[in-house]
Amino acid sequence: MVPSLISQATRVNDPMVRESKGPVSRAQSRIPGASESLPAQRDVFGRQRLASEGFGPDYLSPINTSTRGNDPVVSALEARGIGVSKPVRAKTWTPEQWDQFQAVAGMKAHQDLLALVRSAKWKAEDKEDQADAVRTTVTKARRMAKRSLFESPARKAKPAAAADPWAEFPAVQ
Image 1 (spheres, helix red, strand yellow):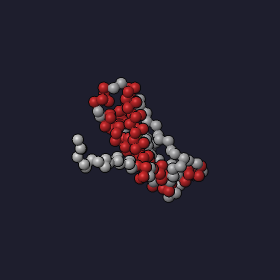
Image 2: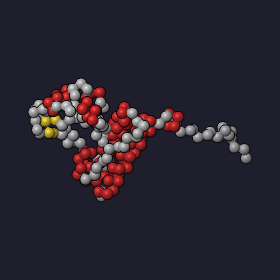
Image 3: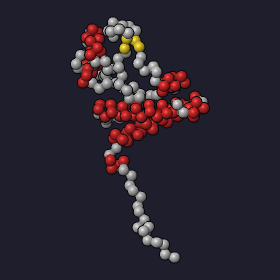
Image 4: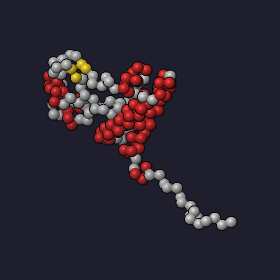
């Protein structure tokens, strides 16, 4: 177990919330210097999560604040009670691949959702249709990220349509 005072010192020096899946990495995330070797946790939009910020020195304040309260995507989704789930990690991905996927997929999803919630179509749809549009947008962003990061260049390239060998010759009548 890592005492809370040491854990608080870690947050002052390393404000990122770190991925910790087991007891060893949980302890590591609370030790100054050791926590930085763990990947940062990311939110559904691929942004690295920061430990809650308080008024005044973080370790003295019981009052937490949020720096993301003015995000128009988050505001629009919360206003309609629409949630976005975290992506599912493929068992074969390394921690670095998982981190990269979350960053790329999250940024793309946020960018596309921002365009969606600012559109006239969004304002005209009912809540169910808006929720469907959000799901579709996020799914497309995650597929795009997966393709761009993990598919081999040979699989990405689509074969060119076969050229007509007779196209250069005029038609004979």
